[in-house]
Each structure stands twice: as C-alpha cells, then as structure tokens.
Image (cartoon, rainbow, N blue to C red):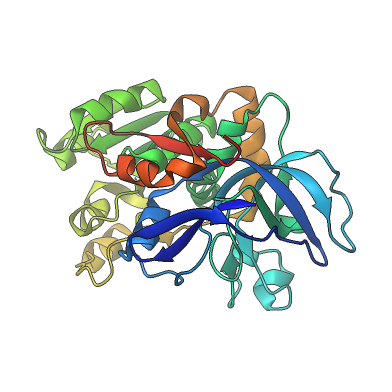
Length: 343
C-alpha cells in the first residue's frame, strides 16, 4: 500500500509499504480520508516530542471496514466509520471502569506502535470503531476527532442551560467548543482571539459575541457582557502561557475552566493560584473522552455541529508535505485540511 512515512524530523516520504494485517480483536480499514492535525505537524517537526520516526502518523481517520481479525463481533465489512484514538491496556482500574483514555499505559492510534491514517489502509482495535451514517461525509468523518476532544471536555465539565461560555482561540478546537457548547444549551458563547478576520469566521459557527484581544480589553469586555459576573465556563484552546494565565480572571465566582491548548515544551506559566482559590474555581485538563464520539456523530448528522464548512482544503496523500506547509500559511489560514490516500 501507499503510505506517508515520517522518516525523520521535518521529513516525510510517500512510498510503498506492506499492507497491515488485522490481529485478534482488530479490524482493517480502507482509509477514505484523513484529517491533518496541527499536533501531527508539531510531532513531524520535533516541536512536540511524542513518539519517534520512522512511523506513519495520522490520528483523524474516516475509513471503511474491509477486513476482520479473529474474535471480532459487532463490526461489518463495508461499514463506514471513524476511529476513536485512545488504546488502553484493558486491565488497569481506568480501563475496567471504561476510561481507556486515562489508562496508565495508554497508547494512541497514529503513535507507535499503532500506525495512523496517512496511508491507504490501517488496522485498529475493533473497540475503537464508531459507525457513521451515510449523511456524514468522508471529509466530516475525517475531522470528527478534532471536534471530539473539545466536545469531550464540555461533556466532562457540563454546560448548564443558559450559561455564558468564553472560548479563547478560534482555530479548529475553538470552533468545535463554540458549536458544541451551543448544542449543549449555552445561552451565550463569546469567542476571543487576536485576529479579527478569524473572529468574524467564528460568528459563522455560532459565536454570539466576539472580542478582539489585540484591540480590546478582554476582561473589561467580558465584565460588560456578563453584568460584572464573568463567564460561567472558560475554554482555553491556544496553549499560549499569557492566555492560560488570564483564564481565572475571566471566570465567574464558582466558575469552571477547561484547559485544552498544549503549551510548548518548557514554556514558563505562572498560574494565578490565589485567584483560583478566592473565586473557588474548578480547573480541568481535557484531551480525550471516549463517551462523546457517538453523541457527536449524531450532532454532526443532524447539522447541529457543522464540520462540513470546517474543511477548507484537501490534498492527495502524495502532497502531504504541501498540506503541512499550508497549516503554517498565514495567508491561506486553513481551518481543517484533509488528505485522500486513494487520489
């Protein structure tokens, strides 16, 4: 099969490799489309040290079941699906209670030893296959993982009816937070970012208010919009230390903070512990949540979460280096990119 193999930091080669063979409790997928994630770019360049080359990256996968390993049940040949990324040991306390994303020895699809979706075929545990209906396109399926992590964070924190949610950052994760918060009953969603053009884009995905941090006093504007209370829930998606540090200031008393954006390795962060204590804030880190995938598929199928318009660019697998380059292109400013292994 054809695959894009990460061979060294900053280097990826599209070449022929052996087809994977599904083992016990595994299925073989024909990859229909794969989302290109900024995390993969950071791993590929060495900015984020997560696994080592050589390896096949790609954790955002839409595929069609084309082979079944031993002891697989409940999965059918020809079924279109997305792939939930967390692989647990199945034996520890977290796995036994259903939280394989918190497994002490957790592995992920797309990270060794599990090859990812930048290939024509991939094998995955049958337990990680989530069927999608015909009304959800291959492209939507390919980027569903990018919305699953933010949505899983909101499922963990809870969005209470009518609450004000502030979202810091309006990249793919920010747009997913905005849409899912609205779908879960938020009364007002406020999007905050430095780039006004990106903020205008956020309005198309359901933001009720926007605050341009390069032009406005964010804390003052939040206070104005909330009658001085602050946001009930603050979602941080950028990973920038200065923005992480600001989250407690923007939250209401007894509010919640979700930290999703990953800071660069070694980045110094001064967290406002006194503010957190005095305001009695609840702070949570979020990365994945296996319980959100099926509900999210239903939200996408119903149109309440719009992934279709988040796919702004597409490439054949042979041009994956161009896809990575576009992620860094300030002029093109893509939301999400997909690659097609069979084109």
